[in-house]
Image (cartoon, rainbow, N blue to C red):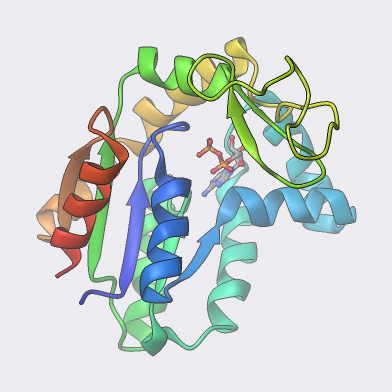
Length: 215
Ligand code: ADP
């Protein structure tokens, strides 16, 4: 099985859900650059201070800052065990830097899965998504509503949305994805590593196609 993989796709394409399941079933480490950046912001570190405004506006954090953070992460992990990158790389120069780091350690990327998803689905998934700040349980206003509107079934705590999950910001994130990240498909297709999975398929089918691509 291929173990060094990148999950590509617009916000709301379901990368995070697939990654959680791959981690559970195959023990692959999952790293989300967005999650690492939000943690830096919470800690108030230098990287966090430089990133905060970009995150709030839904714009890409500059390559230099992201490469510093991800380069450090990469140095801290044994590449032989495999890992899933979610949210990184997002620009061509990030992809090139990643290839260089991995080539230097003789452990190239093995597969890239792109979850193809149009704006209507993205908007529906993200703007309807709420979660419990206490237990992390995720709801959707239409498809997975809580029993009492706005409140967690388990904790009775008021549900919240990620600050950058409002409709205008999601539209902007999607546009930036299309302009800056979608072109990475060509880069990885030329390397013979790309598989495209339609995000409109059922979660079961998406997972099955992902596993098939890794085998
Ligand atoms: P999503 O995939 O839903 O957009 P993420 O958690 O991956 O959410 O990213 C949230 C935000 O973090 C992005 O809108 C961007 O500001 C920043 N970010 C994450 N990864 C990168 C990256 N590789 N390059 C630049 N900015 C990034």
